[in-house]
Image (cartoon, rainbow, N blue to C red; front, side):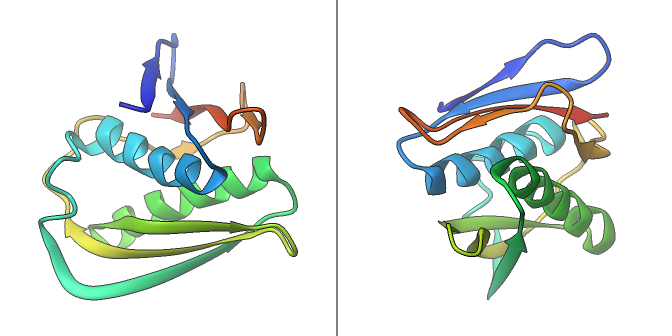
Length: 137
């Protein structure tokens, strides 16, 4: 598992290590879903046939990752489905994400996640892409 949960007194957090920035953002989405909605093993199997594309912009990596996770939370809250990314591409100029994914049913809530936050946020591109982020629950 490329991510791990971080103990926190009021919120929940996780750390992700990946081989690329693209994989880092993809794994962050799966970590969010695992913490908020339970196991993610079956997510890619239980989906509608329709694919969707998300594009998220940011002025820096910190804003990009917070916006990415908050958009995924927004989709769950407003549409009651999970956007499960199959590919994520982080583009440098202008900084944005293009993610292709499928829709998966939500099977309950493990932990009610309100938002991704900037508090305690650490993200780096190199030498190995790394993310530490906390979620408001």
